[in-house]
Structure formats: structure tokens, C-alpha cells
Image (cartoon, rainbow, N blue to C red; front, side, top):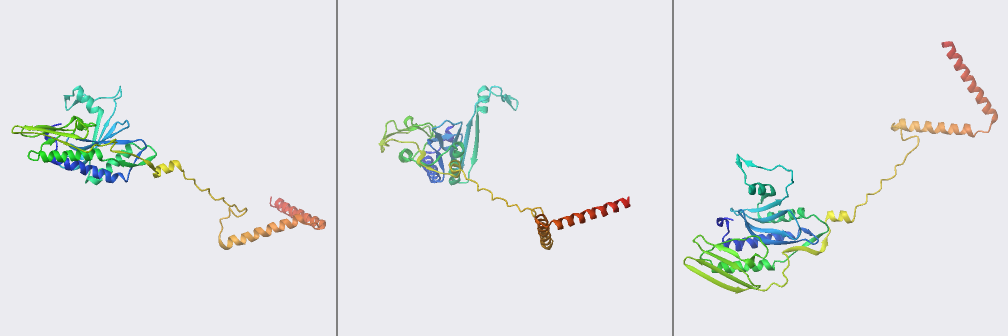
Length: 321
């Protein structure tokens, strides 16, 4: 990383707490899956100064939240992917043949930057992207432990008091427990130094330039049993998606359809419908009387009348033909 892109010590001591404060404020509105924890690693990378999220689970995508050279909040997503054995690969760009390193790095890493309007929006976007990367159920409230980062904030503030006349640039490599290795310091006049915590509870500052040299040490509160910066809490939160899995909704049964014989297919309305119903009822009543009648003479007479009507109908039909 070019030294010109490193932030000033005065900028870093103010920027890092602001970013974390917005992340902590937004954490109460989001959840993490059971067993997931996140580390926040200070990092300076390709013009971005901020924090990288390091999960304790395997993933090919990493998120970084920070600001660019203009001080604008940015959420960066870096995705690594393995190349298929038979896939196409870029060999040249604008007539220039790419080296093996350029070909591999260009195809294995994908980076996207989202520019946000403020730190509140950036923090919300970061938690939303983390939920998309780790969508497992059940979900739990997020518990945050700021003790380790508050210790670094205090060390940066003390180092700035000692180096206020120079205000050197500081580099963050984004590796776990980087304070044990030390944060590199540099100045445009040739000054260089290191801020480190070699032993627990002890900080050491060394800085040297052409006309001055400084060595300082101070103690810091011991952090007992330091845990991850953020982790899934013990109490699960039942999100709508989780509730749908545990308690599937039961659809009410459709009411039974009633079917009225003789009228379901009748599309007539008003007086026509009522008069038709009366004629239909009278006809059924008449048929029932005829069937139930026990008068033999009347039945014989009715058969004779029916026979005469058929004979007349047959004669009329014969005369027409």
C-alpha cells in the first residue's frame, strides 16, 4: 500500500470509533445465525481506511467498511472464486499480454464498492450484506464486545499526544492481533516508527526522525477473556422467515358448496324465476298424485285418453304424408 494512502494518526483515532459506533447502533436491528462471530480488523487497502469483517466461518466473500480519500463512506465487497479447469481466461488487454500474476488475480478476485451517503446508511448496508452472506436459521440477537477496540482507541489517542508535532501516517494491515506485531508509522520528512503492544496491558511507542527520537511506554487495563467483537447471542429472535419454518400457517378449509337440485342451472331472475319455480312444483305435485292414486277406474280411463291422443296424432301425421 503506498504510504501516501495511509491516514494520519489524528484521522485514524477519530475515524475508527465513529465507524464502530454506527455499527453498534445498527446491530440492535439485525441478527446473526447461531454460532457465528465476527472480528473487526483495522485495515488500509486500495484507498480505503476502515474495518474488515472477519467471520469465524468459511466464506468466499469479505466486507470492508471505511472511507475513501475524499472521506466518503464506502462498503466494499471482495469475492474470491476458484477457476474451473476448462474456463476461458483473459490473455491480453488492449494488445498487451498479461502476466501470469495479472491473469490469476484478475479472474480469482471480484471487487465491488458501494458509496453511501452517511455512516448510518453504511452500517445498515453492512449488516444487511452480512445477513445475505449468512442466512442460516435460527437467528439470534447480536452481542458486541468493544473492550479490545477501546483499548486500541486509547493507545492511538496517547500516541497522537506524543507525536502531535509530526502527526505521522499509520498503516493497518488487517490481520488478527496486529497490535502484537505493531502498527507502522511514517512521516514525509523521513521519520518512521512503530506502535505496538508486545505484552498484554503494555504499549510501546517508538518514533525517529532526522532531528528527534522518541521512546515511550505506558500500561493499559488488562482485558480478561477477550471475545470476538460481535457474536450471536444466547436468546434466539424469531424472524418472520424463522417463524414460517417452525410454525407453518394452516390454511382454513373452504366452506362446503351447497347445491340446490333443479335450480342450480337456472339463470333466470325475478318474476320469470319465481313463476318457473311454481310451475315446476305444481308439476311434481301432479306427478306424485298420479303415481300415488289407488283409483283403478281413473287409471284405466287415463290410459284410454292417452291412447286416443296417440291415435289422433298418428292419423294426422299419416294424412300430412
